[in-house]
Amino acid sequence: MELHLRAASDIRVEGSEIVPPAELAAEWSRVRTRLQNEVGEVEYRTWLRQLSLGGADGDEVTVLLPTRFLRDWVRSHYGDRLSALWQSENNRVRRVDIRVGQGVQPLAPSVAPPHSTAPADITALTDNAGVAIPSAVDGLDDKNEGRGDGIVLDPRYTFDTFVVGKPNEFAFACASRVADQPSSPGFNPLFLYGGVGLGKTHLMHAVAWKLQTSRRAGAPAVSVAYMSAEKFMYKFIAAIRNQSTIEFKDNLRSVDVLMIDDLQFLIGKDNTQEEFFHTFNALVDAGKQIVVSADKSPSDLSGLEDRLRTRLGCGMVADLHATTFELRISILEAKAAKASVSVPPRVLEFLAHKITSNIRELEGALNRLVAHSALFQRPITLETTQEVLHDILRAHDRRVTIEEIQRKVAEHYNIRLTDMASARRARNVARPRQVAMFLAKQLTSRSLPEIGRKFGNRDHTTVMHAVSRVSGLMEGDSAFAEDVELLRRMLES
Image (tube, rainbow, N blue to C red; front, side, top):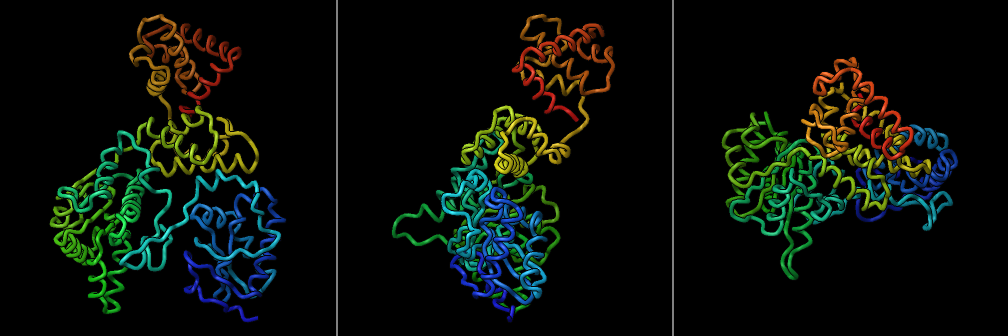
């Protein structure tokens, strides 16, 4: 059998289905059946039932999954086994490549039936299938896995799914204004900046979605070009190499909205900066909207030409701050609710306290918890959370101090930090103080006298009494014990 059935360049990862040759489809059906028998029904339904056949190129076969999350998981956990199984079916196959896209699934017993009990919550939390919208520019940012003549937008990234809080409300309001009224005075360009995983890309996708879906009946479609700065550079270099720079310029300057993600990538690329500067000027002068994101404000992007930084800062500059505890809780609650997953409030609080730097990592942690719960039919608890997320939590661990313990306990029980060292004996103050002393003894190497000094120069016997009292209460009161355990898990190193 000739294995060169379809060139990899002919495999579409979006749009119309592919009908592969019967021989390849038969091999694929047998591979899927064997894989299902090996991993079991539950694991197969959770991770592998959405695998579909893309095609073959030489000694490489391509299989497809609809989301990046599933692709990454299957690559790391089943990639080698897929290759081995296919080689046993056809020894000319050397590698199975797993990509994002949609192909054809064979009608074989290995495919889960429509009434499958596969946990929909996992799909809801991780679904990232791209949806194409018209564009004047071919291609887009690699991180969206898009190819072809359209922009691939993440269907999760809309204004409705963006959780708004104090750290991001201004950026959200600015993005909404641009989506409703592009090229408004004072809002062109719109420059969004902030750290990794704080929502810049989400807002940019939301703007594009709104522009595409809210136009009035009979009005012409809004042409949007969305790409990363890296993609912009590669396209510019390719245009130079192919002697098609005029076509490149005309395509970019014909759009209604140009969106460039991660502009900091252009630092040090002088020729690409020059081209972007001229494109920027041409679009703004023509009344077209530009939306840009970066990790720093225009004034802090050292390495960009001064004239470009000045133009970027002449419109609306909006930053997305690091998330607060309240915003992280809201994000987790929204994700869990959308997926129809019940997660105990104490688990959400624990995650929001422990994973503070990155929304993507926070969502990823929740995804993993849900997947583990579905696979092993175990409830989500504080104990399973610590077990399943041990690597993430270890990365966020640090040496705990008595001062931090006091601050966390005071925040948890809604008392003043100064009460930790005060002489007040009211129960609503004394009990949290005892808990803080107990945790200081459990989580630090400080001696009892040292701990006492941190709590208003109290005697070491007072600390001993607090430790004994809290231990006794934990044995007799499960709710209190869970409360202290939650604090300990948030603080422990």
